[in-house]
Length: 298
Image 1 (spheres, rainbow, N blue to C red):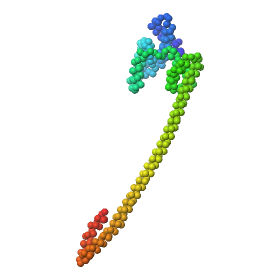
Image 2 (cartoon, helix red, strand yellow):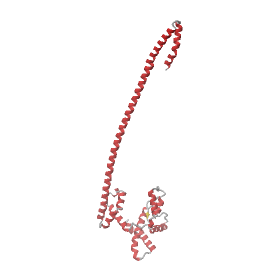
Image 3 (cartoon, rainbow, N blue to C red):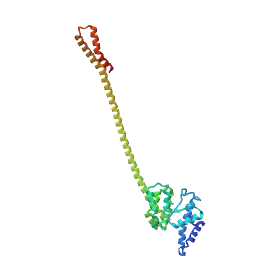
């Protein structure tokens, strides 16, 4: 953004704003520097946008501010260029636009309610805070692999009060880099400790999983053994039952039948010895027909 302060269109906008405000001569220089900062930012974001802007959904670059001077300047610029989509918006407007596409969460609701308090709160982010932030970013930019740094790590450094206090007394860029580097080293040590703890927990979980798998395997083997024993027991019971049925139906039953038949025949012969033989035979056959039919059908 260094080259923007000398661009003619930026200077023209600064002078246009000064003519519009007509500040007192004693504050003219200070007001020029303040306007220079705001107009450089406006033109930087304006150059990032498509021309003309397509729609609010198609734009990724915005200036979110509670400085209504900048919002008014943006409105006057849009009237002169017939652009309908604003470039400067206040937080409440941006949040209200986003709520049509952003899922409603607790954090989003807190942000939405918090924007209504912004115009009534004192501005804690002063020019000195901004210069300190730029010095931290300049120091971070000296890292060769700055792109590998996570957003969380950079945010931690930017909001670290100890770093900001030490930078106030730093007299050179090397000292500023040293201060920021100390925080990165501490953050790296913290990350390594967290990683080591996580790895130990992971190894412990792996060991537990292996033990559980072995226990499950043992239980499966026990269940398989019980199922095999149960099947063998059922097979033995079926074999015993078949054996008992064989002996009952085909050995013991017929023998008992023969004995009973012989006894019955002998008794009949003694009782009807005086009858003709053909009558005795017919009577015996009739008496033995039903028992033999029952035996055969069974």
